[in-house]
Image (cartoon, rainbow, N blue to C red; front, side):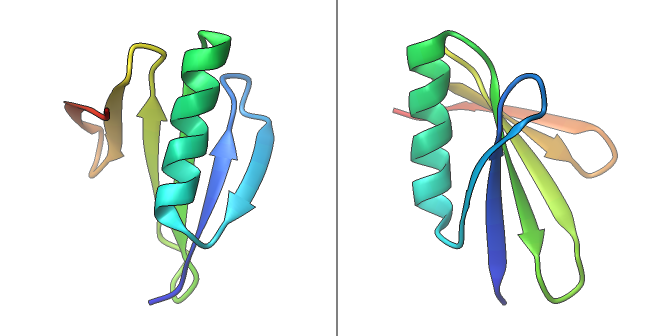
Length: 77
C-alpha cells in the first residue's frame, strides 16, 4: 500500500510531505524538540484516503490519535 506522510505544526500548518514514514517521524520529532512545540504527522493511505495522526511532543513522547479517540503513549529516542 502506498502512503504519504504530511507534517503539521501546532497551528495545523503543513510543513512538508514525504512517502517515507521514518523521515516524517524524525523531522516532526526534531522540529518539536527544537521549537518546543507539538508537531503532528498524518499518514494518508492513497488507496482509500484513510488518515491516521500521530502527535510528537517536545519531550520525545508521542501520542497515537485514531481509532475513535483511542490514545496510546510512547517515547521515541
